[in-house]
Image (cartoon, rainbow, N blue to C red):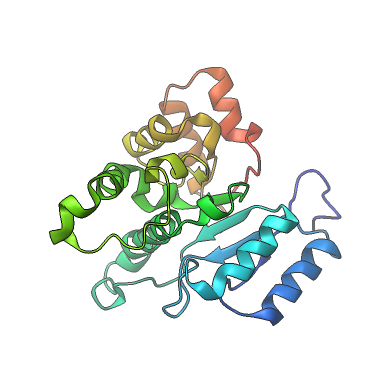
Length: 234
């Protein structure tokens, strides 16, 4: 599909960050031989998270290959036992899993160690922009807030919001105030248009309308819809 529709379709590999050498060899082959342009990974997989030590070789590889990594939640994230009704697993549990993963990657020092990493968080980052102030004060207060739990070892030299602005998020949220919060937090340069279409093709127009409703200037709107690096349409 990528070869047939050059310039319009971009193919990404998929990989389990904690999967081990076999997964990494196939990812490298898919990029260097098949010409795929990036990689998708789930925010968790059977209890393993991308900030686990087993994922270090994965992030070293994608940084060396200089490809973007899209973090997308699995079909079921944490809290499955309470999100198994009314599609809450999809609409609540999955974003929560994504937000947890991005937060863990930040505080566990992924950008401190790999500042050139290209990381894209799907679904508006699972609300990470709404909680970034809490992540910041947890780092700033450190031992003053000892009763909230340990903050050791300290693996970052700046506030979490500093590192949040080093990644990209997509706008799959369908709530204009939430999208506006994200853009005000990170800037339009760090957002990509997304719609969950396909497979939910009816949502594409809703996503486009939300971008219109944000009231952005023409330059920022163009950045989000097509201009920002690594833009995607799903």
